[in-house]
Image (cartoon, rainbow, N blue to C red):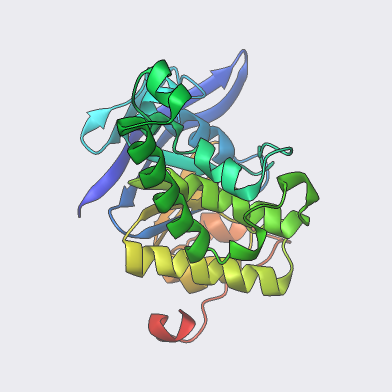
Length: 268
């Protein structure tokens, strides 16, 4: 299997609190990999390790062949990892367009003088970056909102903007931290459509934290299950739902339902 991300024996603790314990999992290139588990299982902590926010005490994180443990978040982002956040993290006073342009900041080059007079290479570079951002705006159907401040958008639309901003960085690997939380059913259907189009049209590799297990069953190629900081199962949605440890972890919670097989093209 061609993996863009491989995590081996990853351990993270804060003082006496063990958050992750010998976690092993992978993300297939060009596929949707879901990361599920009860609240407090360590899912967001794992994404924070991959993106350079947390420094694990042991283990290895291999992204595209490089061990990225110890890399700064800026270096990880430059290497091609982008993420959305559960708590939005948008710039509220900036417009949708400006929030997405922020994600392109690392691609801007040139001198301070060239940027100040907006001439020559600096002008051509900004026009190119704006074209790339406009492509993302069109993809996420945000064109009516491009000049609206993030603060003035409903919560569901802010979540989509956060998703779009991560994609504006043109990543090889996209980390999604509960993008469906707080969304209505119609908004979740839009989210599912965007994820499928990224998977099939743009061939983006995705590691996706999600609590809506029906969405996971519909969209994920592969699933990893975390519980109490340990990876207790990996496989297809149909495989992991039959693992006794997964059933035990979800007692009293929503069961992982596997719908009848249907065409991805129809869902797109």
